[in-house]
Length: 339
Image (cartoon, rainbow, N blue to C red; front, side):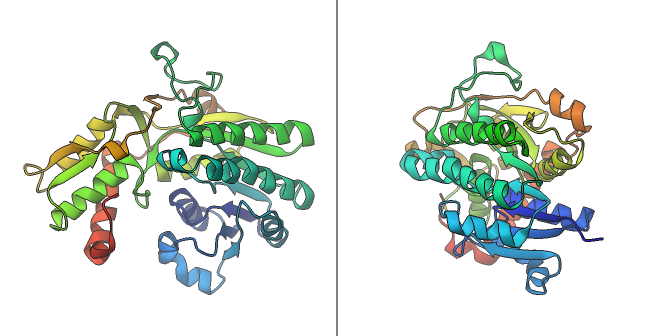
């Protein structure tokens, strides 16, 4: 019997690479990962041997803004399952490049789903939206459930509203098995340094190596976030497509540990042997014009349907994130900027 085949768009990202790790360890699926020819491969370095040997992992080149390349990826992958994770995923960047963000995330999702509709109509598909779709939520609506109204607070968030609605539309209009998720903040090793907790960890690692002065530059520290571990997140995504998938369903997924961004910063600093020397400085360039400042999820719907629950403690998530940056700075420190 042939092995199931899965397509992961955005396999080189934090989530995509951890999902590949999970599937290699927990399934016998063949994994087809879509990436751009210029995508950084750092997150896949630990499985490069398997990729080179074509041992269950295959890379296919495609770009969400190129219709022909998307079609070719789907034709080659012939997927039974699809995790559509690729996106312009940085909210702050979207203020500088709103049109690129819209094209990549909304029209890119249309291109992926059109190709699947034509060449893999029976695939079980996960479309990854974001908790950012909810944006500025009043306190009385916390915790945020699936029916909370959208109030996006960035061009990225607007693009993810489009992604969410496109996925649900294709499920309803064309009878495709598509589920949409709004994952709340998830982090851990391989988190991009454009995200708050990861740039904090990176700066602390650079301070420990005396590459920069003992000052952590920050943006808005008052936003409330609920943290999940990326390794719990990818397990949730696997269960989404394998546990009684419901076409057109949409779910909030996230952790259980809520705190302000300032609390996250203080926790990370507390892990450093140089904690007594470190100060904090507001950097105006790190502030968004408006912010999604209350991100606390109600995940009861997804947990009731799949049985999933987060299991990795908050402390381990942040320690592993800091250790990830310590390791990278130790071997590549001189080439890093403090963004």
